[in-house]
Length: 411
Length: 113
Ligand code: SF4
Image 1 (cartoon, rainbow over the protein chains, first blue to last red):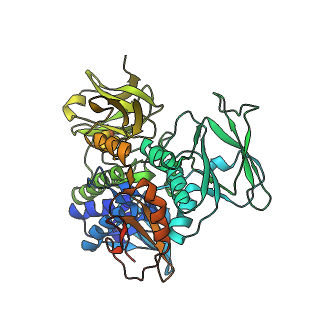
Image 2 (image 1 turned 135 degrees about the horizontal axis):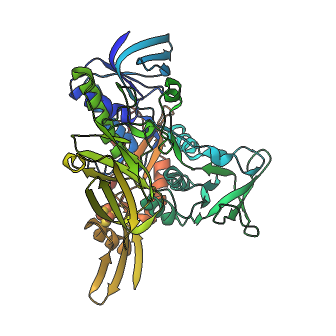
Image 3 (image 1 turned 60 degrees about the horizontal axis):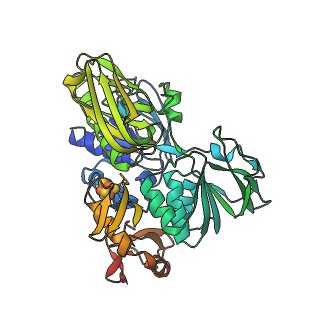
């Protein structure tokens, strides 16, 4: 079967991309969703704080998702649910599987919008048994919010990612006692506001530079041993402390879901763990685009929607007017910058650069260099958990060989 | 006297300092005026939106929120009331599930079921 546009994933990225592509003129398209309902991870993110940037109001995850679902439905865009994509070729053939069997869609363009999954490595290097009661924070979130079961009564959380922080509050509200959150780094990877409203509001301690060194218990978790770590992240002998609990949640970060992409043969950026893209979010294969958390993990869904719209419009442009000629220059992550996205910038158009700093500090200066042009921007504070963005005018990098972003402390 | 707050009104999460002087409270560190209002509320009567879920009569879960900020000290009282609710579908986003769950604040659905 032929389809002009196939969008893989019906979460916030896929839905926003679909609407943008439709509004730019594409009609023959389908969104492939593996779950029973579209909406992605937002379905279980029942807390508020979404949409502040985009809609200037504080919405819950399900409300934010529904806004986009309503837009998709109003346009009559097809969403194929309960359907898995099992293969994607560089020829843009998409192999799918659902109740009715295995079938192939021959796409004119493809948008990757598979989102991300939780890192699981936190569970691996800890001594002790593997009793029941160990959950990733996202799994626990699904149990509580979708199925309505509380996975435990006395909880220790390892890792201070946003989902872990949100679950600390959620489980407290549902009657569990959250003993503490342990973060191995010297700063939290979660948003400051989540530390304030999810931990501080409920007097839940956050132990920075601490980790779990042992999990005890036979059938079920009975306690964990936590310890302070040194600069090399090694537990400091003598700092161990045993905390009784029946549940451990792991919130040690998210990683783009690119198993499919790897099999396609697309190269992945070791820093973002997503594809290399240009300002249109087009990958190394023309006609295949990527957006949202499959490209790089975002902290705000508002930016996912924005990025997906860029990809959706670009896919429409590609389908309607064909591939356009580009002259690219690379973007470079300089001092104290983890990555810059997109990894290459097409000349002749303004470019919005998204980037993450490596460490948190106050009074930061962002420096963007492109050939002769040097621009600086001040920030009161920067943190790895908070993605920054800067827009550079086309004229400012017209003659440059690269665009370099670095972040330093104000002198 | 100085007190520190993290503003939770937007993702920027400004770190605010409130200094009480004879002339009132002086707030610094806020990027926008909402930070000042937030600090004032935190110092007098902190309030929060409560989000949770209720079990519908058909067994599924439905996400809910208060349509205004409830007093921080009333959060668990509101949670107790939420736990007792079992609405019958169909329910649409924005439907009131419990009027005046706290003061004049209602509990509303944030999902369709
Ligand atoms: S002061 Fe303004 S910008 Fe800063 S966190 Fe509060 S609402 Fe956001």
